[in-house]
Length: 182
Image 1 (cartoon, rainbow, N blue to C red):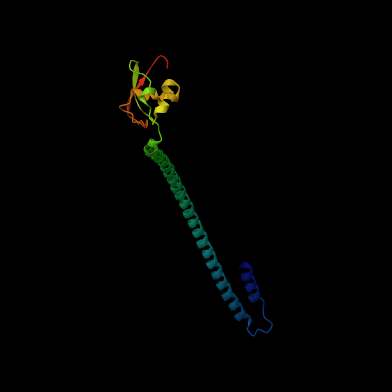
Image 2: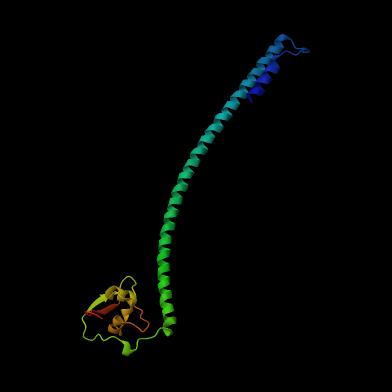
């Protein structure tokens, strides 16, 4: 742009060979052109200043939007994490429900313990517990007897509470027989 203005000035200042104008009119034209060129340069400077200030304003707005987006992103990531944890809990509950439903379906395939195979627990000492943490009868046998195959002792002591499918739920009160040895 500057080169164009320079060449324009240079062209205008070089006298033309076939010029019919006098020296005074030539000087007047030159002054007039200089004024116009200064005006054009001033307009260019204003334009440049306006564009630079607009660029600066847009840059500030962009930075503000970046900060807002970053905050929004962190908030959404936190919500996603919370919802993911809630989803895990819901999935666990659904699995427990499916287990209880499949227990009803599988009830036919589970063999019930016949009384002749039931351990005798009539005069044994026992402790009373409340089932927690979703434990099943096999896990209780493993916990108290060290062998999950001894679930029959817990079942025999709690036949009125535990159904034939051996399902127990949190909050159930059970008697755990405590023999010296089995």
